[in-house]
Length: 110
Image (cartoon, rainbow, N blue to C red; front, side, top):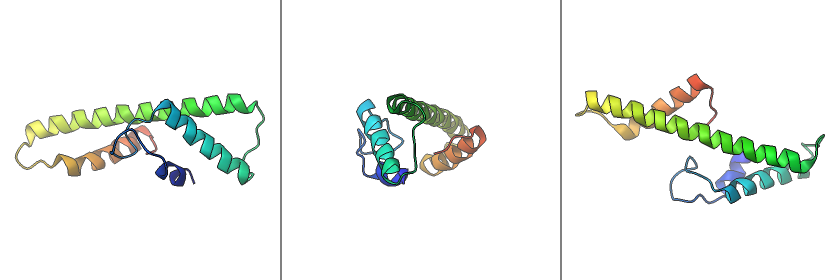
């Protein structure tokens, strides 16, 4: 369900969803998820909804920070690999493979 909501959002660039979302976009994402969950009666708040909402936005921000760190690390790994295998190296093919592997090792959900 979240993937369907995210697909409908525009990012600040034409790249994939791994690009940075603005604070407003993160807020809209959380609003849409909460609205869908409330409509489906999936969620009931034990705390003040505003507190839960603020915490959800913080979790989204932290997740994007973790993914940005993962991207930087993958690019650093690719730089090292490119230095040793300059002629036959295909960076665009290796990036998603390395990112998936590193994400699995670090227990980051993409």
